[in-house]
Length: 249
Image 1 (cartoon, rainbow, N blue to C red):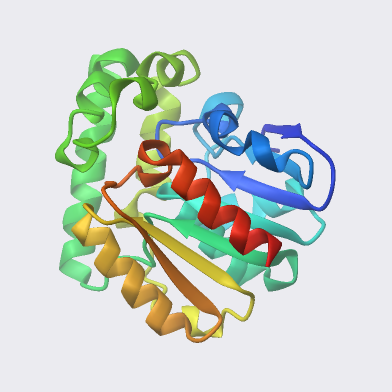
Image 2: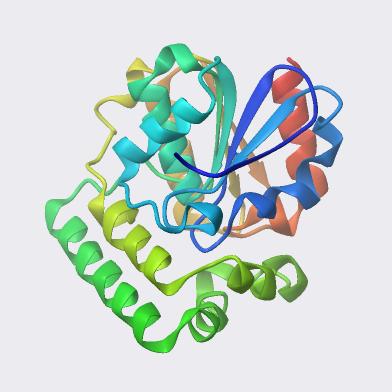
């Protein structure tokens, strides 16, 4: 089983974090929802209290659904968005609404996926060689997180809740290179879907637009001005405004 942390009362909402984060990463953001929802933040396989759990995106999403068997709203950021998307496809009766933040339905080209798997494997070796603290210091300095303020990055908090073996396992089993593309499947998603991306993250705003267009009329796009990949951490007020409006609609 996966480790979960719960707060609030009401219908369930599942929160799935990004790579190197944990369930605790959500609490500075989502406190306003505690009066209306039972928030269930999940430690994804290889992270936090689930550091010893080894699972890919499909079986990992199965484990997450087993942790919250009732139909729930699902909110996932980056890697967490890919877990949430798998949950919606594999268990549509358990996902009442879906929110995908800075995420993707996969890499189309087989050669690009293979290259990404090699890159993920190299990163996994780097984590195990350098250790968590050194890796995280490098990780948040990547161009992808150039607009993320240091305090919002919470490197110390991530390091305290992470293990080298767990993060390496996550990269190998649930990295983007390991994911079979879902673009030919996501038009079957029937629940309401909100796709969020940061304006300054051009790659993922393009992916977000494609995702909305592919899913169809039940999907809407929200682009957060002046934000990058970690748009929910960079612009928390706008993120929460869009999320709350969608959840209460």
